[in-house]
Length: 591
Image (cartoon, rainbow, N blue to C red; front, side, top):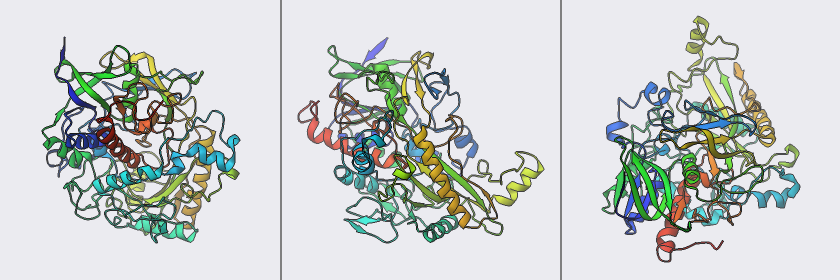
């Protein structure tokens, strides 16, 4: 028996960064908002404080803040000829499942994606010609520009306490910042984090090689800070427990201590935790949505929550899954290349080297999520000619540490036994004296990299699991080879005692080892309903009162972490809803 509840103005599915931003903005605009979150309520004072938070087994090994794969997971395969099998344990990526979502356990890296991404097809066709882009590479322009999004980037950076150094203020290149970034109106709200030895050594080597190193921008407050909404941050303590953990110092920009508490103080807002949304409901003609159905996973009670506006703000994969389960817009067919939901799934590629130095002590346990120096010379630098290397996209390279924990971080030279006395001696010798250099690369969309509903496997509610088909393509292989050479050249110039060199990811992708929680695509944005699920305001082409917000709207993936544009687009969408849509409900962009 499903209980039908009283209609509200807005129902939000998922309460992470996007849901939190929209909840705060829309309740302040006077709308009645209900947020449905699958996970539990957590708070800094009760859950992320000392000594409990420094529990590597609980948070890293047992994935306390992450999605439970025993209840819901995905099936994976590399190509349509293979049988997809369920991901029984989290590995390659880590969707969050608490109030605050992945914004609780992220590292804080916050980048501004630019027209290099938003106008990717136009840019490459203009410079290299249409034949440079492979026929099966389904990249497209996003329908939005950096200039439109710049104020919303700034708003997110000041909300999340991003520490960094501007490289381009109003077109003027600034010493110490990224000279290849797009122009910004204001510097970051906080200065960069204190550099560590590994990042300083990398910066010196990169600079000597002619590159342009800069401190990685990160939502780790470099000093105490009060954001424009009044949320108070402590200064980063460089405790080393960042990625996969809540922040013990309240220094990491997270939705659970910024936008969500503000929304919760507003009488227009209601949060319901342990609420698993199973379907978005449509009216009889399919042109509007009417609300959602959900189940309280603690007691099994089923509810229907009617709403004037529905916002899908769950993790990117789960947003796509819900669209497929609800039959909203046509599912994508990679053979016929028809339909839109499930199209253009992308991930990231990369390469990494480990350097060992006898007599150098890095103290890797003292770091922050953003304790890296970075070069963008092969990423946003449009002067880098891709033609001789025959790849679309780019990569950044960084040196430093991020959450080098006592159990999981065990750097040893190649050839060391994997267990036993020799392994113990090696871990004791090299733990303090090793550092890493990593490259993070973009992934361009391919017609066969996509999502659909699995015909065999089902979740705890009897619904089809979502099937992910993904593998790296020749474009990413060529980029990886180029990136590995750059990483190794920098590493060798630093004269390490021993070196585990970087190698390109050319083997078939596997879901088993962790790589990054940067899944994009599936309900992509664009300029028309033929090849996109949502318009530039993240509004469904088919149901104008449905908005789908998150990295699932990205038509391809950058080398950058996605949270910067995710946050900016959430503010952009909130602005469009409260200042345009509410006043005149209907399509914000003509189809």
